[in-house]
Image (cartoon, rainbow, N blue to C red; front, top):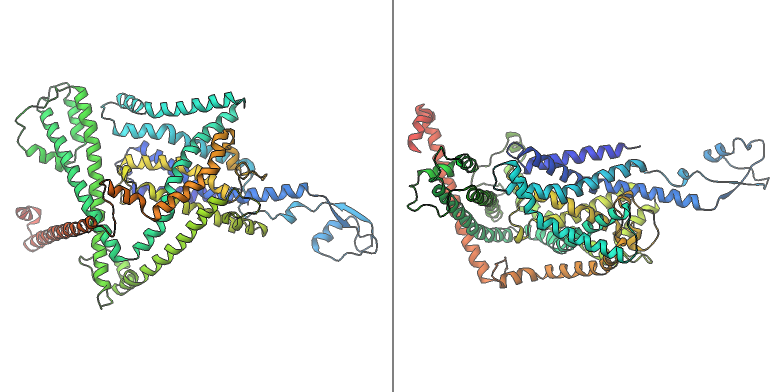
Length: 629
């Protein structure tokens, strides 16, 4: 079929990446350069996951052809009767006609490879795959190590011109890049001392090895948590009571963080008011103050203007450096406040829905009743009736989540077992390799591609879902409905580009298609031909095979027994522990906060309804209704 399947996957992947980015980002508010860079980062990372199975099936086909070409020529009998002559010999073989075997003359011929090795339905020519992987891999690496870190620092810089913001971004990344240059220098020195010789190909391999080693290190940490936590989260999600208690606990902690973020923003606004009191409209720095004020939401700016001016002047003398520092602090504080407010709004909606589900699940009525009428399209309301909603949310959903949790747990066990045994080739005990070999024996390329796609998708889910649950990285948060800020979008694109290539390289090891890891000759995928191998640096290649599986098992056991949560709780960072008194107190506090928030929202809705009713009855419009605001 040529490049048809590849073109279809490229177009579908672009559509998926664009839709997901549209759902999380804000194309109208965010800078165009940020949107394009994040779209390319997400798109190329998804392409690696979705196109690699095509590379695997193509490589299996090429391996079959290569093995057939190297095998001895088959001895076939020649038929010399008038019914089958030498000229129509091949045609007779292909049409399956019986041979006249009265003559025992032997003819040596080779069966065409396509008769023994059926071509995959998704076959992609070698030249196309090599060019494709070269563009995708090196573009994503250029983005993740150079462009996106600079853009991330650029978005939080407090300077007022493009040049000064770019300079601040470079300075901010100086230590970041310096540490990488130091590591590269050490690797080059090691290779020089071992007399391996250096050329362009080896330098590219060293760069890829350094990037993959960094990515594999983080992949171990993330998978060790995600392989256990993803099935466990699905299992707990089936219990409405457990999910509700966990959400109350989260609400109590988020409320504290919300108060701190609001207090921080208020302090900075007071500082801005005090500093701005010394800057008159004719002051040279007044334009910078206008830039700072443009970043502040209108309601906050109006509130600070209504307050009386501070009694004491600001400690800083009005200067460009002081305004840059204030601008940078305000950008960070407002970003944190928006993140917390977004999380709070989504959490309140989630808890209200959970409370409705819990109340309906213990009711004898099989018609779902909402505390507040949901806003739905009339077609959806006609199909998704209250009875169907009750069956789904109170009955079917729990069983489905538990079944999905069991399936995910089994896949996690397969992943851990394969990580422990992928270096064993005789016998082959890596389950992923066993499954692929069974499909390979029957030339079932579709099954091979499905196994590869679903396995890599699950590994990616475990790794990436963990990434945004880490408390240290709480500055980054992907919120739907266009609520994600630029900083978090750039971070997500950066991490996708860094973790996806080593994750796919690790999967090729699990299915025994990386000969430099399993120490057995096999045909290389075109993906690994572009990336190279880690065995240029023996310390990395030899140490990885030993410590990688050990760390996966150790981290999975630590996650299963919640050792990390217990340690953090002991250090004062309270985690959700079912048998802890402080957790119980926070659950009750969260329940009180949500009840108060629900009443506040109900009052706002009632007031809005009364204003609307008043305007409709007396025809006063907004001017009459505004009297009651």
